Amino acid sequence: SAYDAGEHESYMRKEILEQPTTAQAVLRGRLDERFGTAHLGGLDMDARDLRAVRRVKILGCGSAYYVGQMGAALIEELARIPADAEAASEFRYRDPVIEPDTLYVAVSQSGETIDTLLAVQEIRRKGGRCVGLVNVVGSAIARECDGGIYLHAGPEVAVASTKALTNMFLGFALLALQLGRVRDLSIADGKRLVAGLERLPGQIEEVLAAEADLVDVAKELAEARSLFFIGRVRGFPVAREGAQKFKEISYRHAEAYQTSELKHGPLALIDPEVPTVALVPSDELTERNIGALHEIDARQGPLVVITHEDVDLGEIGARRIVVPRNEPELDPILLTIPLQLLAYHAAQHLGHDIDKPRNLAKSVTVE
Ligand code: AGP
Image (cartoon, rainbow, N blue to C red):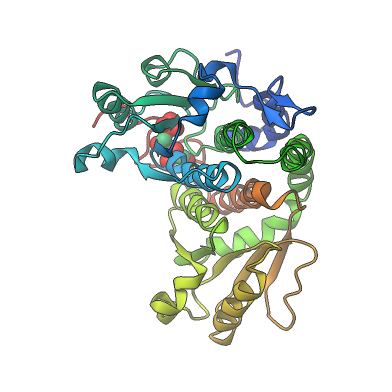
């Protein structure tokens, strides 16, 4: 076929390695260095429409929902508009209030996920405006939306989504920037983020170049029957996505938790048999995160810490995986890349069918 895994042992690995290039594709032509903003023509909303948005509600399933949570954080931080993400599969069933000044955003790689499509139809039936963040051009969700942002990640074949998710995050960053710059976001902050976005594809490449360092850690994690992925605030959706990827292809029980909530229950499970993968970026929460790592270390819980160079773990016994720093708002995506590699190499070590994990379909088109 025109698109095959070529010399790669799987589509998933090929798609992981494509990310520096596909990340450039979603940004291309959409960044404005002069005014520190983004231009998203496909949204079909002028500055007045964008300023009228009072709330943002993001809908997606699975990993698209977790990236939606990352996106909601970006929008709330940069545009100061209350934003949250919800599983599209639940949304319709709780008879949600549809508001005219809420911007609904449907996120989907395939554009065919039935739960997301039905959520969009429900919103539009009730007069809401719904835009799409979709990879497959002309797909059902893309057609159903009032406009949107195509992700330009190219065809994604592996069931476990990687490059499309990265582009969803970048799509949200562009949207947050454009929404922010017609409101309170300063030109200085806008330019800072535009420069950060321009640096990202190269930094993704750096993380991928360190792949070999991760293989042994992944093999160790593969041996555990159950593991935790923990993070706080910006790091929590990253943890959710990391646990999801791990579950999908390694078939190990992986649970995502807010680092802050560990002591309210799951700490009881920590012992030498239960490893924890912790997201500890260099930010205002670093010290608190390290406090939680001490709690885990004291119970001999094996630790893998995804972090930045300047974070000092002191005496804590941990495998450290360092990623480059970008602007703090954009760091989540760089923290996500090693989690893709960990899941991949764990599944590889276990000899699983990486591209077609058991019980799962690439897109779920029936309810
Ligand atoms: C991702 O690794 C999963 N296979 C799955 O959660 C996926 O993200 C979800 O089913 C949504 O698919 P979509 O993006 O095509 O709508």
